[in-house]
Image (cartoon, rainbow, N blue to C red; front, side, top):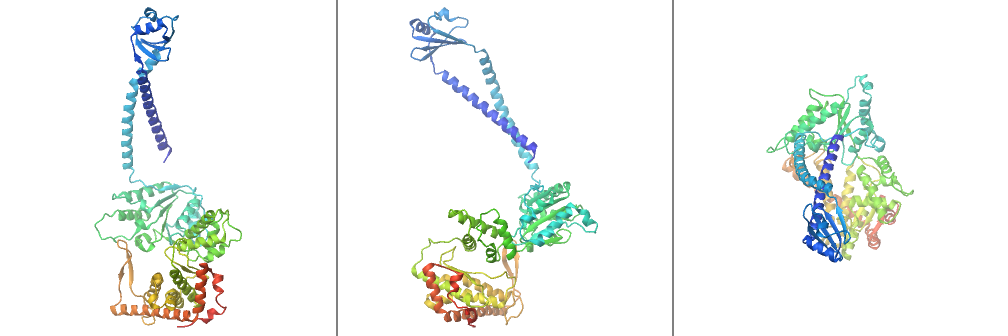
Length: 612
């Protein structure tokens, strides 16, 4: 909004306030006049008699109106003849105090006000209605205008504020440098990239990097969300795209940032028909603006998305988005750097190890880590402490991963016993099997929807998964159900293993159909999952195998799960006494940390794993 629009708004407000004041003034004058009419009207002769008898102490003359104040304070009013003085009625200063008020000026003002005020009120109402109609027309005329926000390096976010992401920052630094010093690149025959696509999971910092580009560029930076292009009227999105690029070209060199590009960049022709093609028209206009007959080398488009697989191929080709910058989940070192950034302005205890927090948060995005630091600060404030401790960070991690503690959930003694045996089964199998992740914590305190949980954390970031690790993970998931069968019998198993069975089945099926980890079916993938934007994610599956192969897949999945269950049974039967001790400890203190759990085993426990 520019200065002229602000001035118009201020003038309108002043005029409205003046009209309101005039209206209030007229109402006030009316009230006063109504109060004046409440005085009793009497003949002038009665006032003269009162003055003569001494009952009236003061007389006020205002034009031809005579107001008399009696000894008791009451007032009466009479009207005398024009041109006749009070002395002719026998009212003299010797008998009562006489006050004459000059009303020539006030009468004139009252007459003018009574004449002008209605005109002002009617005129103001007409002006306000005309202005409202004019504003509606201007909005209609500006419906196709771009709503992009313009920044001139004033976002206060620079590349120094973005922890990690070394390679993505380098790619974007080159874009900023090209706009600042294009001659350096032109001398070598290099051309400016017309588009840079930021790709990565949610929360990895794509928009943050775009803000850093705005802070570093020093050139006009137009920021808009892709969903702001599309309206219910066909053609509005394309008009806004044209207006956006026109504004950017006028201010070149410039950068255009489009957030959530997949809102308008999805593959064309994916719909089933029956609806307008507003989104496709908008996408077509973007394609033309980025690489059509009339292009501008000094305007760079930076876009962000977490769904590059659904984007239209024409949008991704060289000449439009020449450069794809992948922003992945941070590794352990980058997580520690991100935590340092988010704890910079927080009072953290000196003994807090951010490296340990980073080590136990694999797979966390930058947004997740920011949430953890915020939750830790909230927990410290809840306990009326002025400093954040390591315990606050641990509690925050568990809260983010599994939800808040639900100590108010009441369980019977039998349910507590079953939960303790179940979680101890998970922990024992995880600890004994050599390819499973170490146990970080065991608890029978409810969190979220779970009655208890066993927290396993890897020792290091892992990009690849092996077959033996998948098998041991499934065995660990089956440990809870196997423990229930061992201690309570097969007829008394509970629903507590529902989520464990679901996860185990998903892993086993992916091993067979996606990872080629089945000896019978061989190194081949089965099934082609395609996402149809109008039906939802993973809704359509194209079977590229016969019914016989489908039967074999089911057999292989069942075989993997049964083998994992057998392995878990062997481990639990071998360490049944230790498992029972762990369950008793959980019933006594509800939570076991990693060091407390380790005390139940010897140093050679890992070597004593029982093979299936």
